[in-house]
Image (tube, rainbow, N blue to C red):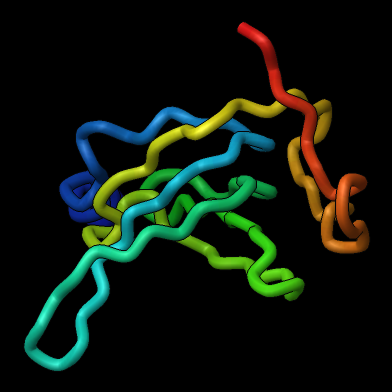
Length: 114
């Protein structure tokens, strides 16, 4: 088991991005199309974080042309180039799955004033 942990520890990023549940983040993702690579942005609200260590992931939700789109990103993936916090949200839950059933202004998260 220690050998497995040492292999996993080598693939954990040195600098983990700092963000919380409810924050609006802009995730830069490396996309490969054939032999070309480009960086694509995905901006939305963080509705969940799960796992620990090398398997830690976070879920980002946004509305695209009136349809809810969710993407799950591994924090330690080499394809996740950068995570920038656009605005921090004020929530009292660790999972914001209830936002899936809400539309319009009801689906917004209050902004936390620092």
